Image (cartoon, rainbow, N blue to C red):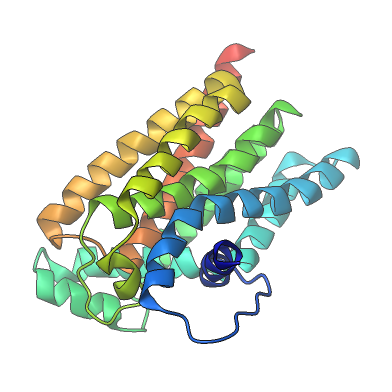
Length: 255
Protein backbone atom coordinates (compact mmCIF):
# COMPACT_ATOMS: atom_id res chain seq x y z
CA UNK A 1 0.00 0.00 0.00
CA UNK A 2 2.90 2.36 0.71
CA UNK A 3 4.11 1.91 -2.88
CA UNK A 4 0.78 3.15 -4.24
CA UNK A 5 0.84 5.99 -1.76
CA UNK A 6 4.34 7.06 -2.77
CA UNK A 7 3.41 6.93 -6.45
CA UNK A 8 0.26 8.92 -5.67
CA UNK A 9 2.37 11.56 -3.95
CA UNK A 10 4.62 11.87 -6.98
CA UNK A 11 1.60 12.00 -9.28
CA UNK A 12 -0.11 14.70 -7.22
CA UNK A 13 3.05 16.83 -7.16
CA UNK A 14 3.97 16.62 -10.84
CA UNK A 15 0.53 16.54 -12.49
CA UNK A 16 -3.03 17.82 -12.24
CA UNK A 17 -4.43 14.28 -12.31
CA UNK A 18 -6.83 13.75 -9.39
CA UNK A 19 -5.17 11.93 -6.49
CA UNK A 20 -6.49 11.49 -2.94
CA UNK A 21 -3.99 10.93 -0.15
CA UNK A 22 -5.25 10.26 3.35
CA UNK A 23 -3.39 10.90 6.59
CA UNK A 24 -0.20 12.82 7.23
CA UNK A 25 2.55 12.61 4.64
CA UNK A 26 5.88 11.82 6.28
CA UNK A 27 9.30 13.05 5.22
CA UNK A 28 10.36 9.47 4.53
CA UNK A 29 7.42 9.02 2.14
CA UNK A 30 8.28 12.25 0.36
CA UNK A 31 11.88 11.10 -0.02
CA UNK A 32 10.86 7.71 -1.43
CA UNK A 33 8.35 9.26 -3.82
CA UNK A 34 11.16 10.67 -6.00
CA UNK A 35 11.91 7.22 -7.42
CA UNK A 36 8.41 7.21 -8.94
CA UNK A 37 8.94 10.37 -11.01
CA UNK A 38 9.84 8.38 -14.17
CA UNK A 39 6.61 6.39 -13.83
CA UNK A 40 4.71 9.68 -13.55
CA UNK A 41 6.41 10.72 -16.79
CA UNK A 42 5.34 7.46 -18.41
CA UNK A 43 1.77 8.12 -17.25
CA UNK A 44 1.93 11.54 -18.90
CA UNK A 45 3.29 9.97 -22.07
CA UNK A 46 0.47 7.43 -22.19
CA UNK A 47 -2.07 10.18 -21.57
CA UNK A 48 -0.66 12.15 -24.52
CA UNK A 49 -0.44 9.06 -26.71
CA UNK A 50 -4.21 8.49 -26.87
CA UNK A 51 -5.16 11.92 -28.28
CA UNK A 52 -2.11 11.79 -30.56
CA UNK A 53 -3.42 8.57 -32.10
CA UNK A 54 -6.92 10.03 -32.46
CA UNK A 55 -5.70 13.24 -34.05
CA UNK A 56 -3.42 11.36 -36.43
CA UNK A 57 -6.32 9.12 -37.47
CA UNK A 58 -8.34 12.13 -38.70
CA UNK A 59 -5.26 13.36 -40.64
CA UNK A 60 -4.99 16.79 -39.09
CA UNK A 61 -2.03 18.91 -40.08
CA UNK A 62 0.92 17.89 -37.82
CA UNK A 63 1.37 21.50 -36.68
CA UNK A 64 -2.25 21.69 -35.50
CA UNK A 65 -1.93 18.33 -33.76
CA UNK A 66 1.31 19.41 -32.11
CA UNK A 67 -0.21 22.65 -30.81
CA UNK A 68 -3.16 20.76 -29.33
CA UNK A 69 -0.91 18.15 -27.70
CA UNK A 70 1.39 20.77 -26.18
CA UNK A 71 -1.64 22.59 -24.79
CA UNK A 72 -2.81 19.33 -23.18
CA UNK A 73 0.75 18.70 -21.98
CA UNK A 74 0.85 22.04 -20.18
CA UNK A 75 -2.57 21.47 -18.63
CA UNK A 76 -1.68 17.98 -17.38
CA UNK A 77 1.40 19.31 -15.58
CA UNK A 78 -0.27 22.49 -14.35
CA UNK A 79 2.60 24.43 -15.98
CA UNK A 80 4.68 23.42 -12.94
CA UNK A 81 7.91 22.93 -14.84
CA UNK A 82 7.30 25.99 -17.01
CA UNK A 83 7.05 28.04 -13.83
CA UNK A 84 10.38 26.60 -12.73
CA UNK A 85 11.89 27.43 -16.11
CA UNK A 86 10.68 31.03 -15.87
CA UNK A 87 11.99 31.48 -12.32
CA UNK A 88 15.34 29.96 -13.27
CA UNK A 89 15.68 32.22 -16.31
CA UNK A 90 14.85 35.31 -14.23
CA UNK A 91 17.35 34.30 -11.55
CA UNK A 92 20.05 33.55 -14.13
CA UNK A 93 19.67 36.98 -15.72
CA UNK A 94 18.89 39.05 -12.62
CA UNK A 95 21.11 37.25 -10.13
CA UNK A 96 24.25 38.05 -12.11
CA UNK A 97 25.99 35.01 -10.68
CA UNK A 98 25.28 35.88 -7.04
CA UNK A 99 23.88 32.82 -5.22
CA UNK A 100 21.76 34.54 -2.57
CA UNK A 101 20.35 37.08 -5.01
CA UNK A 102 19.52 34.32 -7.48
CA UNK A 103 17.70 32.27 -4.83
CA UNK A 104 15.74 35.35 -3.76
CA UNK A 105 14.64 36.02 -7.34
CA UNK A 106 13.48 32.42 -7.73
CA UNK A 107 11.35 32.79 -4.62
CA UNK A 108 9.62 35.91 -6.01
CA UNK A 109 6.25 34.85 -7.53
CA UNK A 110 6.43 37.59 -10.18
CA UNK A 111 7.60 36.58 -13.66
CA UNK A 112 10.17 38.86 -15.26
CA UNK A 113 10.96 39.41 -18.96
CA UNK A 114 13.58 36.65 -19.06
CA UNK A 115 11.03 34.17 -17.70
CA UNK A 116 8.38 35.17 -20.23
CA UNK A 117 10.81 34.91 -23.13
CA UNK A 118 12.04 31.51 -21.91
CA UNK A 119 8.49 30.12 -21.75
CA UNK A 120 7.52 31.48 -25.17
CA UNK A 121 10.65 30.19 -26.88
CA UNK A 122 10.45 26.76 -25.26
CA UNK A 123 6.77 26.25 -26.13
CA UNK A 124 7.43 27.40 -29.69
CA UNK A 125 10.33 24.98 -29.99
CA UNK A 126 8.32 22.14 -28.49
CA UNK A 127 5.41 22.67 -30.91
CA UNK A 128 7.72 22.78 -33.94
CA UNK A 129 9.69 19.71 -32.84
CA UNK A 130 6.53 17.76 -32.07
CA UNK A 131 5.02 18.70 -35.44
CA UNK A 132 8.12 17.46 -37.23
CA UNK A 133 8.14 14.32 -35.11
CA UNK A 134 4.51 13.51 -35.90
CA UNK A 135 5.23 13.76 -39.62
CA UNK A 136 7.12 10.47 -39.21
CA UNK A 137 3.86 8.61 -38.47
CA UNK A 138 3.78 5.67 -36.09
CA UNK A 139 7.52 5.77 -35.42
CA UNK A 140 6.98 9.06 -33.60
CA UNK A 141 4.69 7.63 -30.96
CA UNK A 142 7.38 5.87 -28.93
CA UNK A 143 9.43 9.07 -28.90
CA UNK A 144 6.39 10.95 -27.60
CA UNK A 145 5.83 8.27 -24.95
CA UNK A 146 9.40 8.34 -23.70
CA UNK A 147 10.00 12.10 -23.74
CA UNK A 148 8.15 13.00 -20.50
CA UNK A 149 9.43 9.78 -18.92
CA UNK A 150 13.09 10.66 -19.48
CA UNK A 151 12.52 14.26 -18.35
CA UNK A 152 11.01 13.16 -15.01
CA UNK A 153 13.81 10.62 -14.59
CA UNK A 154 16.17 13.59 -14.80
CA UNK A 155 14.30 15.18 -11.87
CA UNK A 156 14.88 11.99 -9.90
CA UNK A 157 18.55 12.26 -10.83
CA UNK A 158 18.67 15.76 -9.36
CA UNK A 159 17.63 14.45 -5.95
CA UNK A 160 20.11 11.59 -6.14
CA UNK A 161 23.22 13.44 -7.32
CA UNK A 162 22.90 17.06 -6.16
CA UNK A 163 22.14 18.68 -2.78
CA UNK A 164 18.84 20.51 -2.36
CA UNK A 165 19.75 24.07 -1.39
CA UNK A 166 16.49 25.73 -0.32
CA UNK A 167 15.51 24.90 3.30
CA UNK A 168 11.76 24.68 3.64
CA UNK A 169 11.25 24.47 -0.11
CA UNK A 170 8.79 22.15 -1.86
CA UNK A 171 11.41 19.43 -2.25
CA UNK A 172 13.29 19.95 1.02
CA UNK A 173 11.93 16.83 2.73
CA UNK A 174 12.57 14.67 -0.33
CA UNK A 175 16.06 16.07 -0.66
CA UNK A 176 17.08 15.11 2.88
CA UNK A 177 17.30 11.35 2.38
CA UNK A 178 16.31 10.12 -1.10
CA UNK A 179 16.67 6.34 -1.65
CA UNK A 180 19.97 6.43 -3.55
CA UNK A 181 20.45 2.74 -4.27
CA UNK A 182 16.87 2.12 -5.43
CA UNK A 183 16.76 5.38 -7.34
CA UNK A 184 19.95 4.64 -9.25
CA UNK A 185 18.65 1.19 -10.07
CA UNK A 186 15.45 2.70 -11.47
CA UNK A 187 17.43 5.16 -13.62
CA UNK A 188 19.71 2.40 -14.91
CA UNK A 189 16.77 0.18 -15.85
CA UNK A 190 15.13 3.11 -17.64
CA UNK A 191 18.32 3.91 -19.55
CA UNK A 192 18.44 0.32 -20.79
CA UNK A 193 14.73 0.02 -21.62
CA UNK A 194 14.52 3.20 -23.73
CA UNK A 195 16.81 1.89 -26.51
CA UNK A 196 15.10 -1.50 -26.34
CA UNK A 197 11.71 0.15 -26.91
CA UNK A 198 12.63 2.88 -29.38
CA UNK A 199 15.80 1.56 -31.03
CA UNK A 200 18.27 4.15 -32.30
CA UNK A 201 15.84 6.94 -31.42
CA UNK A 202 15.89 5.73 -27.82
CA UNK A 203 19.69 5.69 -27.82
CA UNK A 204 19.76 9.27 -29.09
CA UNK A 205 17.19 10.40 -26.54
CA UNK A 206 19.04 8.88 -23.59
CA UNK A 207 22.39 10.24 -24.81
CA UNK A 208 21.00 13.76 -25.24
CA UNK A 209 19.35 13.66 -21.81
CA UNK A 210 22.57 12.52 -20.13
CA UNK A 211 24.55 15.28 -21.83
CA UNK A 212 22.06 18.00 -20.86
CA UNK A 213 21.84 16.67 -17.30
CA UNK A 214 25.63 16.63 -16.91
CA UNK A 215 26.08 20.15 -18.28
CA UNK A 216 23.17 21.59 -16.29
CA UNK A 217 24.20 19.87 -13.06
CA UNK A 218 27.77 21.16 -13.36
CA UNK A 219 26.51 24.69 -13.92
CA UNK A 220 24.13 24.49 -10.95
CA UNK A 221 26.95 23.33 -8.69
CA UNK A 222 29.02 26.38 -9.61
CA UNK A 223 26.07 28.79 -9.56
CA UNK A 224 23.98 27.68 -6.56
CA UNK A 225 25.92 24.86 -4.94
CA UNK A 226 23.05 22.46 -5.74
CA UNK A 227 19.52 22.60 -7.06
CA UNK A 228 16.05 23.89 -6.20
CA UNK A 229 12.58 22.79 -7.30
CA UNK A 230 12.62 25.57 -9.88
CA UNK A 231 15.85 24.39 -11.47
CA UNK A 232 14.57 20.80 -11.50
CA UNK A 233 11.50 22.02 -13.39
CA UNK A 234 13.68 23.95 -15.81
CA UNK A 235 15.76 20.83 -16.40
CA UNK A 236 12.64 18.77 -17.16
CA UNK A 237 11.48 21.25 -19.80
CA UNK A 238 14.92 21.53 -21.41
CA UNK A 239 15.35 17.76 -21.53
CA UNK A 240 11.92 17.34 -23.12
CA UNK A 241 13.06 19.60 -25.95
CA UNK A 242 16.44 17.88 -26.18
CA UNK A 243 14.93 14.40 -26.39
CA UNK A 244 12.32 15.49 -28.94
CA UNK A 245 15.11 16.97 -31.03
CA UNK A 246 17.18 13.78 -30.74
CA UNK A 247 14.18 11.69 -31.77
CA UNK A 248 13.50 13.91 -34.78
CA UNK A 249 17.15 13.84 -35.90
CA UNK A 250 17.40 10.05 -35.65
CA UNK A 251 14.10 9.35 -37.42
CA UNK A 252 14.94 11.87 -40.15
CA UNK A 253 18.36 10.30 -40.64
CA UNK A 254 16.83 6.82 -40.93
CA UNK A 255 14.56 7.80 -43.81
